[in-house]
Image (cartoon, rainbow, N blue to C red; front, top):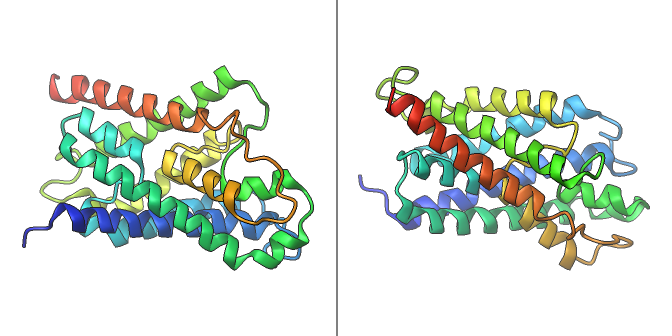
Length: 247
């Protein structure tokens, strides 16, 4: 059965929504006051983000390949593994899914947002901010984390690793572990956005939702978790193409 581009984009939307709902949801659970998950810690967040990606991949994989990330779509297209004509539709669906997932997190944890005083904590539920503000280094961190993400995803999809089997059907567990590894190893500096759809649309949601005492949305930093991942994905796609396809 032929799957239309609309169907692919629909599942990218649903998969990204679930990814952000569960990913931002675990942050809300661990940092917002009076939550039963309060002070759950970094390990809980990184594990749950990995599982959030797995859920999104399992939902969207059979239909769209489960990119769930504009950087992944761009990286695959650069590597020649995905049609450039599909990229705009995928990115639009991913961004919309990220926004809707973030809004659902706010609705779900509304009472706990109200019980939390610190504006930075509330912002941290929606999007990333660096532990130490150093934008050139922050940009490098997002670049390298996303480079690793896209390069390894391309390697997972290599026919020597998954003969005659697509990423969507087999890739959920390896990608889950990859996201966990990046978060635990490289996430301490910027919070490892590595995905514009999990950072920019939720930041927009934060800016427009009626969150009590929310403060600013960190727009002066917002370009870093978008530009870094896109550049990292471009580099990963180019280098993968040279190393694997020309080797």
